[in-house]
Length: 315
Image (cartoon, rainbow, N blue to C red; front, top):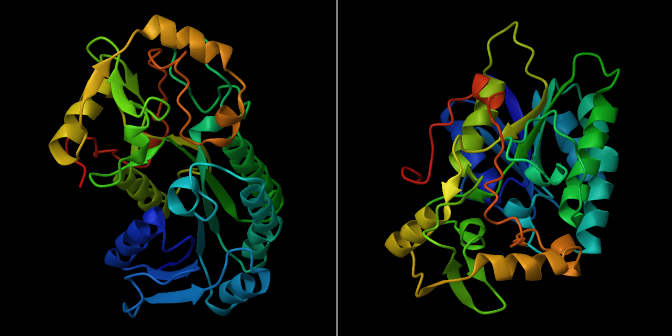
């Protein structure tokens, strides 16, 4: 069975992925600053080190005969806050500089990295955004991940059999992890939850377990299928604002939800476009586009996985 090296192994995504890999019989080598609940599994090797520790991470790859690298570190839903600082950008750049090259040198056959849907240019139509859509990262986080994508592409170019998979993931959620969902119906300035009309407008998200299933799918894809490349990884259908409200009322303490005037909010948001918050806040909600029903097409990724998880059955 393959040995999988997971960076950011103790974070939200890394913990769930490592547990799923171990359940499927994979061997896992995880690296992170803090240990996790998988450390007692005999098929799990944990390296406690910061991801930018080039010597420790490279040595761990060479010592454990790694087949696959899954790069989750420097990912906002894993171990970064929603505000991206210059220090985070510097850390990610330092990791990109050595990690992929170290993996290729160690003989890794597959490299999977988690990127973000934010790398795409602003969509001016209601057509779903596909992997062939124009890219124009505007936020600090989007640029950070896009640079990481380019670093991966450069490292595997001419690297023999090494294959790269880039997962452009929409904001993650589970039944208990809801910050990304909540950000779409909450205004921190007014300290209140809100909705426009009946809430019949939606947003693209990705249930954490759909991402885990996708990565497992890449690792178990049948021979003859060319699976390397870029994938949009998200739920098959957007989640409506009213569904978020109902979900939070059922499982979390939501409090009062007010109805607001979309036209007035859209004008204010358009005037504020390009603000510092929009550039550094991963969860910044552009109210001028909130009702545009911008969606991402995961048809390509469905060739790898079923995307069976959604808000109504997430755990």
